[in-house]
Structure formats: C-alpha cells, structure tokens
Length: 286
Length: 243
Image 1 (cartoon, each protein chain N blue to C red):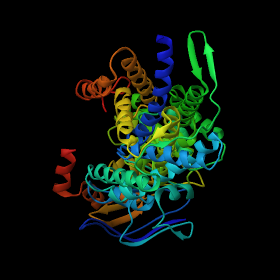
Image 2: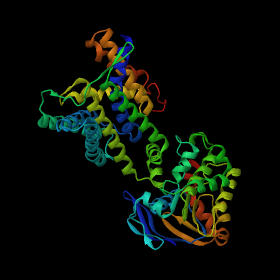
Image 3: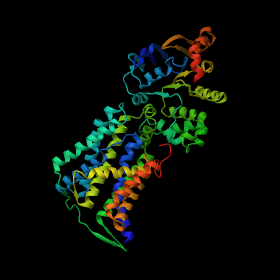
Image 4: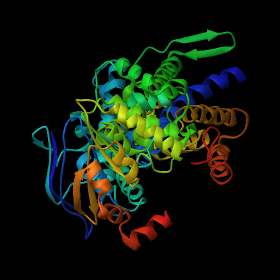
C-alpha cells in the first residue's frame, strides 16, 4: 500500500516538477515571474486534447502541445514582459495575471467551460511489480518527466548556450559584451518554460482524463509552491520540490483526508516563505 | 583601423560626451586618461554598443558600427573589459573563459584556452573554482584571459588597475604589454596616468566630455598640463577621495 502510494506520488509529483522547473527557469534566470504559467499548462492540456482528437498518436500530440504552449509563452514575453522591462517590477506581474485570465476565456470559447473528456490515447497496460501496480501511463509520465528534467539540467550545465543562459542571469550586460544575444536567450528560456508547462498539462490530463479551462490556477500555484520549497532559481531544487509535493499530496489523500490537502500544501508554502525563503536548496542571498 | 569621429552622447538631459575624436591603429596601445566623470566609461559604452550616441561615428575596419548591438560588435573583434572586471561569480574559471569564446561559435576554443593558460598559469590552476572565490588580482587576470578568448582585434580596458595593490598593478600592466602584438590594438582607459603612459604609445586626455590634449606617451607625461588635467582640479579631487 505505502509503496503503491509512493509511486502514485512520484508520478503526480513529476508533473509538478515540470511546472516548477518552468517557473524557476524564468524567475531564477531572468528574474521574471510569469503568473500565467498555470494557464499555459491548461492551454497545453487542451492543445494536446485537440491534437489527440484528430487521431494523432500520443507522442505527436505531446510534442505539438509542447510547441504550442511554448509559442503561447513567447507571446507572453512579447506582450507582458518586453514592453515593461523598464517599468515598475510589479507591472509584469499584473500583465501576466491579465493574460492568464484572457487565456482561460479563450479556452472557454474554444473548448467550453464544461469538463472535456480526454480521449483514450494509448492502450493502458498494467504491470504488477511485486506489491506495486504500475500503469503504462505512469511509466510514460515518469519517463517523459525524468528525460526532460535531466535533459534541461544538463543543457544548462554543460552546453555553450546553457552557459550563456547562466551568464545572462547573473550579468546581462556582461553577457551581451561577451557576444550573447540577450533577447534570444530570454525568448528561448520562455519557450522552454512554456513547453514544459504544456507537457505537464498533457501528462496531468492523461491521469485525470478530464480537463476544464480552470485547472491552471491551482496547478500554477502548486508549481510555485514546489519552486519555493526547492529554492527559487535552483533547477534541481524545483524538481525535488515538485516530487515532494506530489508525495505529500498523495499520502495526505491516502492516510488523512483529501479536504486538508491544500491547507497542508499552502500552509507549507507560507511557512517556507516566512521562515525559509531560500528554500531547501537555495542560497541565502536570494 | 579604428576611429571615433565627433561622438556626442547623453544620459537623459546631461550631455556626457561633447564631440570626441580619437584613433587607434593596429599594434598600438593608446591610453585615455581623465578624472572621474570625464566620460571615459561612457565613451567605451558607445564603442561597445551599450549606448547609442546622439551624434558621431565609430568606424571600425571601414564601417560605421554605431547602431550595431553589443553582441554583434564583439563578433567583429572589439572586446571590452569592463570596470570592476565583471567576472561571472557563479561560474567556474573555465566556464568564464569558455564564455569569453562565445562570440566565436563553432570554432575550436582549445588553442585559445592553451594560450590563455600559458599566459596566466594561475587560471589553469584555478579552472574549477567559482569566479567569486578569486582574489581581485586573479579576477583581473581572468577578465584579461576571458577577453583574449574572443581573439579581438581591438581590446578596450576600463581601469584594469582599479582597486589592486601596487604589486598587482605592475603585474596587470606587464600582462597588457604581453597582449600587444602587431595585429592587435589596445585602448586603455586609466586613472593611473603614470602607469598608463609607461605602456602606451600615444594618449588622450579627456576632460568633462572633451579631448583636451593628445600626443605620444612621452610628450604627455612631460606636459605640465597633464598632471593638472589628470587630477581635474579640486572638484574631481574631492570625488576621488569619496571613492
């Protein structure tokens, strides 16, 4: 029973990790907070739904939803951040809140406000591993998440462009004097952030099998919780934070009452912000 | 090869540069001296593309580069070492050096790395350390090495001696002399005029946005006015003290 819940928690948590990773890429590297991130997640889930309805195989729907969500996030950068770079730091916060609401309503217009059923995209197989029952969906979610997280971590750590991203994060002007096109780094980072939210959206929808235009709000906030617990700007912290929250959520539902779920999670969020704002893995200076 | 013609620049309503003409030829070290607030850093910002001038031209290899963004100017071969070195503190020494080669995409950087390590053995020793763990002198060496990685045709250095102990200042200037080759031009901005004139072939004196004197290193260092211009009168002196 416990092992089974642990697997469930890891599966759910890995989708939170993807969200938190997208948050922390933009906030940690670019010092920009995109409140519409959760709504990009929702939009990605719907895009995946539409592509799957067209009869596309899951992997293709997933990739296209990623690209679509990434493009939406580039639009967010263009509309909500770039024109406001010299404005008060709260302005992009407000502009992204507005964009999130627009996105929810666009989704409502396209897909309706009633829950949409997610089509059966793959044959679900169940594997009995000792006491644990794992479905093919769990495996797809875990494998996709781990692949993306390791890929991005290594990309930022080891590649030339990843170094340029970190240089831009620390000293934008110096980075540009070294030959880095700052705007391109920002657009790329936003795209990756949105693509991760899009993947997370499709993967989450695969678990719950139905989605509404309003699922982005809680998911976005949960992504933020995971990011704060892991330490803002710390990629690995965001991943671990997401997994932790997934496990806490599932364990709470299994051994306690589901009604207390968000009290516990957001209570934890508050506790971290007040008492340990640098998170588990962040550095004090942040 | 490199020429600044009638550059004027302003920050908001304050005109900082009031028509600057300056030239640097291949194989030369040219120094630009002046007190705090004379506009030295502003001129370097204009040349490197950070600041767009309100008037004038910057001609590099026969082309006006005034409206080109900084990341493209580096690619053409102009490299600025900023005041305060601006080492990337969260990145290792090696990563800092590799970032120096970012303006040469697709090229093999190993040769350049070897050259830098030969010139600055300390950087090879410390290559795995984070930038922030280096001392001031080591950071200046890293800044020089990082610039070298870009294989620039024109080096610009903004106060490389700033905040360094005298012994380290000598070391830094020795390295600057080593950088001087037939194909490279160096524009050295300094407050330490005495040191600057020791290495420079020619020099300019900048005073409140204007070039007031120009000449060879020897001419300038024997000029009565230079000391006065370099100190910039009482007001600048007070500013110096504040710093």
